[in-house]
Image 1 (tube, rainbow, N blue to C red):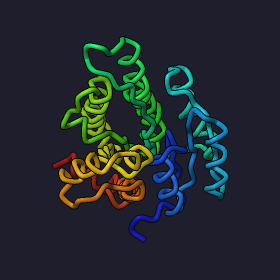
Image 2 (spheres, rainbow, N blue to C red):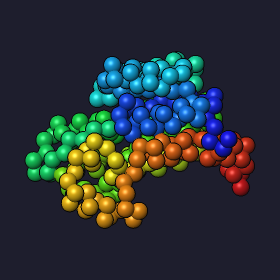
Image 3 (cartoon, helix red, strand yellow):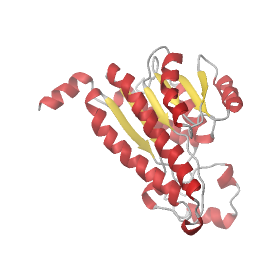
Image 4 (cartoon, rainbow, N blue to C red):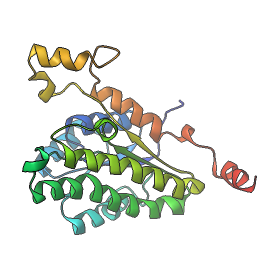
Amino acid sequence: MMFDLSGMTALVTGASGGIGSAIAKALAGQGARLAVSGSNVEKLERFREELGGDHVAIGCNLSDGAAVDQLVPSAVDALGGKLDILVNNAGVTRDNLLMRMKDEEFEEVIRINLEAAFRLMRAAAKPMMKARFGRIISITSVVGVTGNPGQANYVASKAALIGMSKAVAQELASRSITVNCIAPGFMTSAMTDALNEQQREGILSRIPMGQMGSGEDIGAAAVYLASRCLLYTSDAADEARSV
Protein backbone atom coordinates (compact mmCIF):
# COMPACT_ATOMS: atom_id res chain seq x y z
CA MET A 1 0.00 0.00 0.00
CA MET A 2 1.20 3.49 -0.81
CA PHE A 3 0.64 4.79 2.73
CA ASP A 4 1.64 1.64 4.63
CA LEU A 5 3.51 2.65 7.80
CA SER A 6 4.36 -0.88 8.92
CA GLY A 7 7.69 -1.04 10.73
CA MET A 8 7.67 2.71 11.43
CA THR A 9 7.56 4.30 14.88
CA ALA A 10 5.93 7.58 15.90
CA LEU A 11 5.68 9.97 18.83
CA VAL A 12 2.41 11.92 18.99
CA THR A 13 1.97 14.69 21.58
CA GLY A 14 -1.46 15.66 22.86
CA ALA A 15 -2.52 12.21 21.74
CA SER A 16 -5.57 11.81 23.96
CA GLY A 17 -7.25 15.00 22.68
CA GLY A 18 -9.65 15.23 19.74
CA ILE A 19 -7.28 15.88 16.84
CA GLY A 20 -4.39 14.08 18.56
CA SER A 21 -6.38 10.89 19.06
CA ALA A 22 -7.57 10.97 15.45
CA ILE A 23 -3.97 11.32 14.25
CA ALA A 24 -2.77 8.52 16.52
CA LYS A 25 -5.56 6.21 15.36
CA ALA A 26 -4.79 6.98 11.71
CA LEU A 27 -1.06 6.28 12.09
CA ALA A 28 -1.68 3.10 14.08
CA GLY A 29 -4.28 2.02 11.54
CA GLN A 30 -1.61 2.07 8.85
CA GLY A 31 0.76 -0.05 10.92
CA ALA A 32 2.93 2.41 12.84
CA ARG A 33 3.90 1.64 16.44
CA LEU A 34 3.23 4.66 18.64
CA ALA A 35 4.46 6.41 21.73
CA VAL A 36 1.48 8.55 22.72
CA SER A 37 2.11 11.46 25.04
CA GLY A 38 0.02 13.87 27.08
CA SER A 39 -0.17 15.59 30.46
CA ASN A 40 -3.16 13.64 31.79
CA VAL A 41 -1.59 10.24 32.44
CA GLU A 42 -4.83 8.45 33.33
CA LYS A 43 -6.62 9.68 30.21
CA LEU A 44 -3.55 8.85 28.14
CA GLU A 45 -3.38 5.29 29.46
CA ARG A 46 -7.07 4.75 28.71
CA PHE A 47 -6.46 5.92 25.16
CA ARG A 48 -3.46 3.61 24.78
CA GLU A 49 -5.65 0.70 25.86
CA GLU A 50 -8.30 1.80 23.36
CA LEU A 51 -5.71 1.75 20.57
CA GLY A 52 -4.77 -1.82 21.42
CA GLY A 53 -1.60 -3.26 19.97
CA ASP A 54 1.96 -2.79 21.22
CA HIS A 55 1.83 0.98 21.76
CA VAL A 56 3.27 2.86 24.75
CA ALA A 57 2.08 5.85 26.77
CA ILE A 58 4.53 8.47 28.09
CA GLY A 59 3.23 11.28 30.27
CA CYS A 60 4.84 14.68 29.80
CA ASN A 61 4.14 18.23 30.94
CA LEU A 62 5.15 20.31 27.93
CA SER A 63 5.51 23.44 30.04
CA ASP A 64 8.49 21.78 31.77
CA GLY A 65 11.54 22.16 29.54
CA ALA A 66 13.53 19.43 31.27
CA ALA A 67 10.65 16.97 30.89
CA VAL A 68 10.28 17.88 27.22
CA ASP A 69 13.97 17.24 26.61
CA GLN A 70 13.55 13.70 28.00
CA LEU A 71 10.46 12.85 25.95
CA VAL A 72 12.14 11.92 22.66
CA PRO A 73 14.89 9.79 24.30
CA SER A 74 12.21 8.03 26.36
CA ALA A 75 10.15 7.40 23.22
CA VAL A 76 13.17 6.11 21.30
CA ASP A 77 13.98 3.66 24.12
CA ALA A 78 10.37 2.50 24.38
CA LEU A 79 10.02 2.05 20.63
CA GLY A 80 13.08 -0.12 20.18
CA GLY A 81 15.79 2.41 19.46
CA LYS A 82 14.40 4.50 16.63
CA LEU A 83 11.93 7.27 15.87
CA ASP A 84 10.62 7.72 12.34
CA ILE A 85 7.76 10.17 12.90
CA LEU A 86 7.26 13.09 15.28
CA VAL A 87 3.84 14.74 15.46
CA ASN A 88 3.78 18.02 17.40
CA ASN A 89 0.06 18.19 18.08
CA ALA A 90 -0.28 19.37 21.69
CA GLY A 91 -1.24 22.99 22.20
CA VAL A 92 -3.10 25.34 24.52
CA THR A 93 -5.07 28.58 24.26
CA ARG A 94 -5.20 31.39 26.79
CA ASP A 95 -7.40 33.83 24.91
CA ASN A 96 -7.63 37.49 25.85
CA LEU A 97 -7.66 40.90 24.21
CA LEU A 98 -4.21 42.44 23.81
CA MET A 99 -4.78 45.18 26.38
CA ARG A 100 -5.92 42.62 28.97
CA MET A 101 -3.48 39.81 28.20
CA LYS A 102 -1.23 38.96 31.12
CA ASP A 103 2.44 38.15 30.67
CA GLU A 104 1.87 34.61 31.94
CA GLU A 105 -0.93 34.04 29.40
CA PHE A 106 1.43 34.97 26.58
CA GLU A 107 4.40 33.08 27.97
CA GLU A 108 2.52 29.84 28.69
CA VAL A 109 1.14 29.59 25.15
CA ILE A 110 4.55 30.29 23.59
CA ARG A 111 6.26 27.82 25.95
CA ILE A 112 3.90 24.94 25.16
CA ASN A 113 2.93 25.61 21.53
CA LEU A 114 6.31 26.80 20.21
CA GLU A 115 9.20 26.16 22.59
CA ALA A 116 8.19 22.56 23.28
CA ALA A 117 7.89 21.90 19.55
CA PHE A 118 11.38 23.35 19.05
CA ARG A 119 12.83 21.14 21.78
CA LEU A 120 11.15 18.03 20.36
CA MET A 121 12.27 18.79 16.79
CA ARG A 122 15.83 19.31 18.00
CA ALA A 123 15.84 16.04 19.92
CA ALA A 124 14.13 14.05 17.14
CA ALA A 125 16.56 15.31 14.50
CA LYS A 126 19.41 13.31 16.06
CA PRO A 127 18.05 9.76 15.58
CA MET A 128 16.43 10.78 12.28
CA MET A 129 19.68 12.14 10.87
CA LYS A 130 21.49 9.00 11.96
CA ALA A 131 18.88 6.89 10.16
CA ARG A 132 18.84 9.24 7.15
CA PHE A 133 15.04 9.24 7.31
CA GLY A 134 12.37 11.02 9.27
CA ARG A 135 9.01 12.77 9.24
CA ILE A 136 8.25 15.80 11.40
CA ILE A 137 4.66 17.05 11.35
CA SER A 138 3.37 20.00 13.36
CA ILE A 139 -0.27 20.92 13.84
CA THR A 140 -0.58 24.67 13.43
CA SER A 141 -3.77 26.62 12.61
CA VAL A 142 -5.27 28.69 9.85
CA VAL A 143 -5.21 31.65 12.28
CA GLY A 144 -1.41 31.51 12.13
CA VAL A 145 -1.85 32.91 8.61
CA THR A 146 -5.06 34.94 8.91
CA GLY A 147 -4.80 36.24 12.47
CA ASN A 148 -7.68 36.21 14.96
CA PRO A 149 -8.75 38.86 17.47
CA GLY A 150 -8.33 37.88 21.09
CA GLN A 151 -5.65 35.32 20.28
CA ALA A 152 -2.43 37.32 19.84
CA ASN A 153 -0.48 34.74 21.85
CA TYR A 154 -1.94 31.69 20.09
CA VAL A 155 -1.62 33.25 16.64
CA ALA A 156 2.00 34.23 17.36
CA SER A 157 2.83 30.67 18.43
CA LYS A 158 1.26 29.08 15.35
CA ALA A 159 2.72 31.58 12.87
CA ALA A 160 6.16 31.05 14.42
CA LEU A 161 5.74 27.27 14.25
CA ILE A 162 5.07 27.55 10.51
CA GLY A 163 8.19 29.68 10.01
CA MET A 164 10.35 27.43 12.17
CA SER A 165 9.19 24.37 10.24
CA LYS A 166 10.18 26.00 6.95
CA ALA A 167 13.69 26.65 8.28
CA VAL A 168 14.11 23.17 9.77
CA ALA A 169 12.82 21.58 6.55
CA GLN A 170 15.65 23.23 4.62
CA GLU A 171 18.22 22.10 7.19
CA LEU A 172 17.18 18.44 7.23
CA ALA A 173 16.04 17.74 3.67
CA SER A 174 19.42 16.38 2.56
CA ARG A 175 19.02 13.54 5.08
CA SER A 176 15.62 12.51 3.68
CA ILE A 177 13.81 14.12 6.61
CA THR A 178 10.68 16.08 5.73
CA VAL A 179 9.16 18.80 7.93
CA ASN A 180 5.56 19.84 7.31
CA CYS A 181 2.64 21.59 8.97
CA ILE A 182 -1.08 20.87 8.93
CA ALA A 183 -3.12 24.03 9.57
CA PRO A 184 -6.72 23.13 10.46
CA GLY A 185 -9.53 25.65 10.22
CA PHE A 186 -12.76 25.20 12.17
CA MET A 187 -13.19 21.55 13.11
CA THR A 188 -16.15 19.65 14.49
CA SER A 189 -15.61 19.52 18.23
CA ALA A 190 -17.35 19.99 21.55
CA MET A 191 -16.55 23.70 21.24
CA THR A 192 -18.13 24.13 17.82
CA ASP A 193 -21.09 21.91 18.80
CA ALA A 194 -21.91 24.50 21.46
CA LEU A 195 -22.22 27.34 18.92
CA ASN A 196 -25.66 28.79 18.28
CA GLU A 197 -27.17 28.65 14.80
CA GLN A 198 -26.16 32.20 13.89
CA GLN A 199 -22.55 31.64 14.92
CA ARG A 200 -22.44 28.35 13.06
CA GLU A 201 -23.86 29.87 9.87
CA GLY A 202 -21.31 32.67 10.07
CA ILE A 203 -18.48 30.18 10.20
CA LEU A 204 -19.84 27.93 7.46
CA SER A 205 -20.35 30.92 5.15
CA ARG A 206 -16.56 31.38 5.08
CA ILE A 207 -15.86 27.72 4.22
CA PRO A 208 -16.18 26.96 0.47
CA MET A 209 -17.47 23.42 1.07
CA GLY A 210 -19.95 24.66 3.65
CA GLN A 211 -18.89 22.13 6.29
CA MET A 212 -16.31 21.91 9.03
CA GLY A 213 -13.41 19.52 8.97
CA SER A 214 -13.06 16.44 11.18
CA GLY A 215 -10.28 14.80 13.12
CA GLU A 216 -10.29 12.02 10.54
CA ASP A 217 -9.41 14.59 7.85
CA ILE A 218 -6.36 15.67 9.84
CA GLY A 219 -5.43 12.05 10.54
CA ALA A 220 -5.50 11.26 6.81
CA ALA A 221 -3.24 14.24 6.07
CA ALA A 222 -0.82 13.11 8.77
CA VAL A 223 -0.65 9.60 7.29
CA TYR A 224 0.21 11.04 3.89
CA LEU A 225 2.91 13.33 5.29
CA ALA A 226 4.33 10.46 7.38
CA SER A 227 4.51 7.99 4.51
CA ARG A 228 7.65 6.80 2.80
CA CYS A 229 6.37 7.84 -0.62
CA LEU A 230 6.55 11.55 0.22
CA LEU A 231 10.23 12.07 -0.49
CA TYR A 232 12.90 10.81 -2.84
CA THR A 233 15.36 8.21 -1.55
CA SER A 234 18.68 9.21 -0.03
CA ASP A 235 20.38 8.17 -3.27
CA ALA A 236 18.17 10.58 -5.18
CA ALA A 237 18.98 13.26 -2.62
CA ASP A 238 22.70 12.74 -3.22
CA GLU A 239 22.10 13.02 -6.97
CA ALA A 240 20.05 16.20 -6.51
CA ARG A 241 22.84 17.82 -4.50
CA SER A 242 25.35 17.07 -7.24
CA VAL A 243 23.33 18.78 -9.98
